[in-house]
Length: 390
Image (cartoon, rainbow, N blue to C red; front, side, top):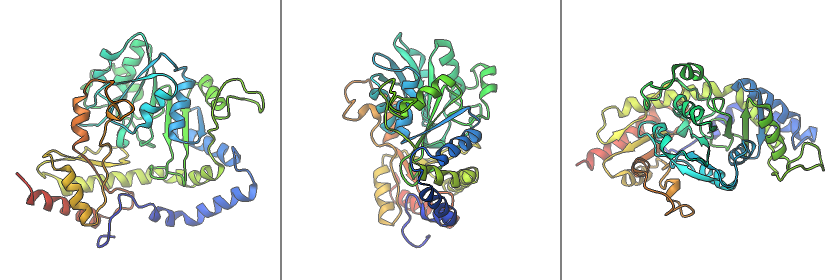
């Protein structure tokens, strides 16, 4: 691939390595006739719950639905406020608005790209019911401090893990400088994202680290009551067919997608480690490059995206130059959620979020990305900056 065009993500290589197993899984479902909430869905829920170390895992239609159902299962609704990050995909804030609550944004930390927990307490009001951290790009948020704040103010925590399947919280975040309660930090260290708060919400969109071949999502919790509500909500608010007890959703994980995810799940740790290797290789080739800030590599970060910051105001020109050389990149996210048309004008400025929206550039990454291809990308970036430096 080093001589041709480089996509932002290659899904074909992974498929070819698992083709026989995936085709067998699809055939098994087709021959069973169990297409909706069949045995493969139940088996996947059990296997993924065991992997994550949670009591309950409930498959649903998408990561967005996982957030919406998770919020409703927590009792979040009209009149409530949920504190979250402005720097995320729209589904984060959208899910809060969809249940009738109001998203309240706290600015982010420039190093981690995640919500700055020290910005949260000043935003808490009598209407605040929950905090929704996002583990952006696969990097765990500062969960020790977030949990400490949540416990102090009696708030729920719902984790947006759309990009962080398999990520582990290391116990340090660099934001609160280790000042959060030691007992909380100790209890959280080493836990997988999504298992720390009251609810975890995952996406299995095909581009995710653990991706299906269509839409899919997952809600996880240790709480029996929350799990029961989530199961009802995903099937039109009913425990028993034709005995609907509340207004719910048609949000079920397809059996074919569950079967595919069962094939992939045993490989996720190896794939995530390969992503970390790709990130380390990028950092090696980009070390000391002026006007570029590279992300820190930690054992818990799963690098759904490898995102750098271009600090000289030439991010868009860099992207255009790389595209001209056949190198695809993406900007996640060019417009913070608070600046989207649906919310624009309703919130104050968030300086760090706004600054990073003009600097971030995600480079190609997937587990099988070869070292020589990474070097080609890095060289193209270096050449542009050398030719257009101040």
